[in-house]
Structures are given as structure tokens and as C-alpha cells.
Amino acid sequence: MTLISQNIDEAKKRLEGGELVAIPTETVYGMAANAFDEQAVKRIFAVKNRPFYDPLILHTSSLEKIASWQLVIPQPLNVLAEKYWPGPLTLLLPKTKFISDFVTAQLPRVAIRIPNHPMALALLEKLNFPLAAPSANPFGYVSPTTAQHVKQHFEGKINMILDGGDCDVGIESTIVGMEDKEVVVYRLGGLSLEKIETLVGPVKVKASSSKPDAPGMLIRHYSPGKEVIAIDSQEELNAISIKQTAFILYDLEKPEVHQENLIHLSRNASDEEAARNFYRALQHWEGRSDIRRIVIQRLPDFGLGRAINDRLKRAIGK
Ligand code: TXA
Ligand code: MG
Image (cartoon, rainbow, N blue to C red):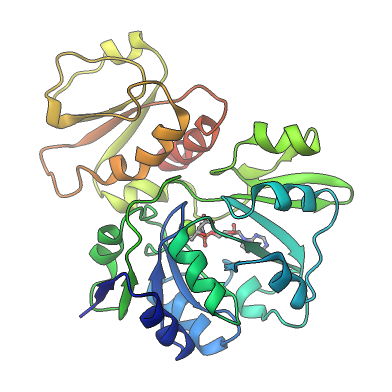
């Protein structure tokens, strides 16, 4: 039995005892464990079926705690931290003796973030260790944005899900670090490139060469047998038959589609609303054998549209 509860003290007690607890964040749900407890960290990899070469993000509640583990935030990343923490920003910092090689997969840096979710923050404030937490999905599947999504995969496999409602941002954090004196974005995510560049100037994007999940895994593994087709224009959309097909659209229209086979990510063309709805939409037709393929409209390539398009690219393996 997996307990779904809003009891923060219960979550604290279990985490202190070395158990796994799925926790809400503003981006997606995380599969959390005490980052300073190697056995607990190993349990994360086991339950997610995650390879040990894929490093974990540490979550905590304050810059003071980060400094207490002797982690130093270099210029100009400290400017980002001050403005966007708590928030959907993960920083790669040179690791220290406090951080285990299991967490970083032997890499020289550690990923850290302060999430912006009231329950997560309340929990983290009560803990004297950081929480290692990858997204709470089996390796290669779509990230969960509700407690129910977590339960679908991990019922009976973990003891507790801390239920913090629907995730507000809906896609994973943006991962940022330094190479020489240059700011580098390693994963596009919930904090837009534009917001980052406003503070630190032009950055280098290396997002496609990072390997969070192998390309093509996202939807194929999640909904086996469903083909994913990305489209850009009304003309392309018009040419597609509605037979056995579901549609995830942004601002285009397909009037002949039955309502139950159509999701509009945002009625008022908001990239933030689209991000919030994206993973939920991908999971919507799971188990519907009459739906053979999903047609998804690409978003304009700015703001969170970039991050959504990046996930879409991985989903179709191109
Ligand atoms: O929004 C998020 O970031 C969510 C929530 C739960 O905080 N977490 C998340 O974790 O998306 P995960 O495990 O699904 O993605 C972590 C990715 C790794 O796959 C890797 O690409 C990068 O972060 N990463 C973590 N530690 C790293 C390190 N030491 N060096 C380089 N990349 C690292
Ligand atoms: Mg993940």
C-alpha cells in the first residue's frame, strides 16, 4: 500500500529513516531520498530502474544550507540563484566532500536547486540534509505532474507520496552551469532562456547533447504503439486524417475532431499554460487502443515553447 498524504511530518520521519517519498515540486514530482544516505540514494535508482550513470539533482531550502556544505555558486550564476530561487532553476556547482559519487555519477559537479512549492519547502526546511530527487517516473517515461501519475507507476513500490496537488510549471527545471567563463544551459526547462539571458547576457545552449533520457524514449515507452507526429502549420494539420488519431494543439484548429480526441494546451496562447498541461496531455490517451497516433503542434520557439519543443523532439526521436 502506498500512502498518499499531505502530512509533512510523516514524510520527514520516513525520509530520516532512509525511505523513499515522492514529493511535489512546482516543476514535476520528484522521487526523494536523503542525499547523504548512500543506501537510500541507491533505492532511488532501483525503484526507477535508472542507470547509475544518470546523476541526481539535490533539493534544499536555502542558500545558507548550500553554503554549509561548502558549495560555492560562481559569478554570474549567483545572480540567477538570487533572482530565481526558489524556482525551476538547477545549478551545476563544483562538488565538495559532502556530496557522494552516487549522487553525481562520478561527475565533477553536483546539480542543486531550491524548489518553489510550499509543501516541498516546508519539508526541506525541517530536514538537515538535502533530498536527492529525480523526476518520479520509471526511467524513460513521462514525468509526473500529479500525485495520481506517481501512484500509477509506483503503487506498492514506495511507501508514501506527499500530495501537493497539480504541478504549477509542469516541465522540469532548466539546468545551468559554467564552462570556463561562459554560462551554459544543459537542459531547457521551466525557466526560459530569455529570462536567463536578461540577467547574465548571451548563454551557450548544449541541451541536445545532454543525455537525460535517450532520444525517442519519451512517448514511445509511455504509450507503446502510439506514433507521434509533430506539425507546424494549419496546412499540415488540414492534411492529416482524424482516423485513430488524437491531437494536442496550441493555436491551430481541427474542427472535425471529436472533442475527446483533442486537447488544446492553451486557449489564450500562453506558453506557461501550455507547459503546465503538456505532460498531462501526453498521458491522456494511454490505454485507449483505438488511438494509434498523436499529432502535436510545435510551439513558437521562444519562452517555454523552446522547452516543450525540445521534449517533443525527443518524443519523436529526431
Ligand atoms: O525539475 C526538475 O529538475 C525535477 C524535479 C523533481 O526537481 N527533477 C528532474 O530530475 O528532472 P531528473 O533526474 O529527471 O533529471 C536530472 C538530470 C540528469 O539526467 C542530468 O541530465 C542532469 O540533471 N544532472 C544531474 N546532476 C548532474 C551533474 N552532476 N552533472 C551534469 N548533469 C547533471
Ligand atoms: Mg527525469
